Length: 393
Image (cartoon, rainbow, N blue to C red):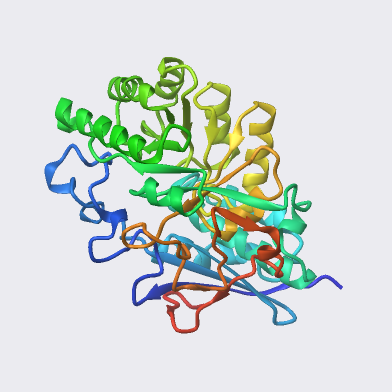
């Protein structure tokens, strides 16, 4: 008999440290990184100054009729908890666990009048991933088995952080640098960006991948000049250079970058319809959906199939086990991103520490599939982290 969904619960996390957007004490993630707000000097030096960390973590739990519980985490905080408890729960409770496709459809179209992207899709993603975790636990299988099984024996990673030279020593195939200076800092900032890349290229040698993460902060002219200037230093790709809504700018940038340099984007895009725009308009070579934000596992399956038909690669943004199980099953996802969460990016630590237990991390830039063989996503909530349910029913 198919298990049904008995309860849906939504929590925020108290005590800090559970959300990678909420790092303390000079963590590189909150350092000077070029952002759309860098045009304002008072918001240039840290991303928390303009509110990057205000949402916080959302934990969604879905309990089946036999007591088995699946869960997932995302970035939606108390806003997301309200949406889960007051709106989305009606589409889950009392329904068979296997009705994931129908549940997703009803969650998306019932929230379309106030959602479509952003925090609502983050929330839907969290619910969807909790359902996949629950289904895996009920069937005693890892999520990657539910997706059709792995197509490779191990995952290969590049590292995102300020120290690609250290990432190379740790066995990663490449290093993605956060761009520090945006257009508001004019030529001086542009020259500093180019100099930083040149210095890093000298440290890592000619064959190690180097990329720039521009975090939606540039205009087309600046991005084009940056890309052309970085060509001689072997920049592999320029990432999320423009506003996510500027599809026309991305199409122009892709045509303008030096031969062999890739244009990537999609971290802040959502749903198959958003990625259809990127792909059909020829905006990029690699799409980078975040499975915790783009609509969850149910939606990234559709996004990936669309990309495959357009000859584009899918390299999800961060998201740890939630993307690992997916990447393992897709031929057009040949490598994955690892976000360096250590304070100085000098060691490999789990992305969602301390919230998750049993979270696997790469060793020498690789992760064996045997590390992903537990039911569901294979991680547990840390009981030491204080969960708060702000909108109990």
